[in-house]
Length: 177
Image 1 (cartoon, rainbow, N blue to C red):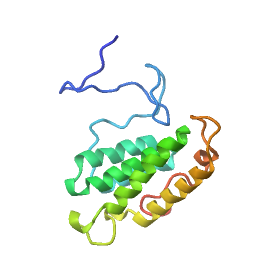
Image 2: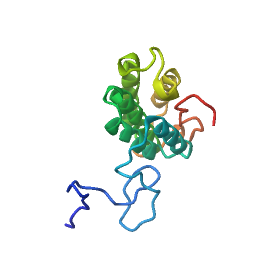
Image 3: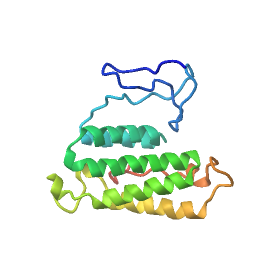
Image 4: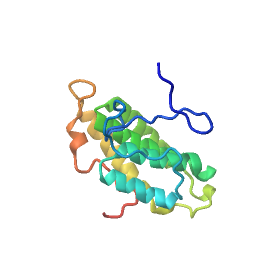
């Protein structure tokens, strides 16, 4: 078995190309550009970048961007960023035709976004920071969950019509494109 690629600290890395849905492709295959493992953007820039990726239908890559803030951002905001990253993974599961995974991740995302206390993280009470539209994101996720309950694919891995719907990807800030 070939050795895995490793970074300077000896941690395993995955250099395999990935498709639009984040699934590994055979080595040497063309894939979508990868999000660097060491990405460390300020939170506001990460929101903008993640939105650009969502607008392109790249929910898995948006998850990678949001996850980088969850891991590198302010400790008091980690629950929020974890919820946002899980939201994007829930969208990825919809795209991949995995309704069970989508339900699980979207439900967790709703819980974490609702549980985040902006005031405890040093932001004005009552609104998410960085222009994030908490009520809009939660309403969108709840609508997706309701649609998932109505659209069960014939077999696992078969995308439902929900995966092709124009409104699948949310507006993180509520701003129009």
